[in-house]
Length: 283
Image (cartoon, rainbow, N blue to C red; front, side, top):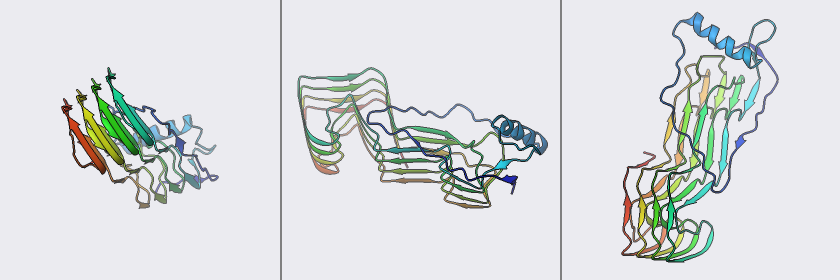
């Protein structure tokens, strides 16, 4: 285990980016830099990076904190997006007649890209991690995403691009750097109920959807709740649920008219559902 001087307790606040309708795009880069396999070169690169961050003491050792909590992490609570759709996202009723909804481009919601470049404490808790609770997206659809009803007549919904919701990428650090004695949930993803209604008529809550002459169309891809994690090369001596994916209840309605949805009823009348790309969701 690589340990330098134990510094003060560093309790970093979780980065909170929770906003209804906020589009946060996170696409994995084409390549990720890898550490040089030569030990001396890797050490030199690490020290240069640490020196820039002011984390080297006068004796050249790493000034490593004793405890770090939530440093370099993301927390999102109920980031909801209704994009090119007829939908109540809370409690209520939507009635639309002769009103088309059209988005020229993409719809992106609650996506996260993190890099595990934090210098962890000897005890690392939830560092470089993403916690996402109830990230919902309704994209080019007639839907109920809460409690209520949607009635759409002669109101087509069209999105010409892609629909991306609650996708997570956690990259490995460029070098090795110091490691922790104990890490708990660091470099991990915890996603609760990432739901996506994409190019569909569906009930993703409790209620009813009636669609007459109101087709739902997405010309791109529907991507929901995917996770990519590159583990740290220099793991903690005692890693507990670190660099792991914990995704609970991932649901996706993609290019479909389901008579029965979550809790409710869907009645499509001359309202075809169409997705021109791929339907991709958490495995």
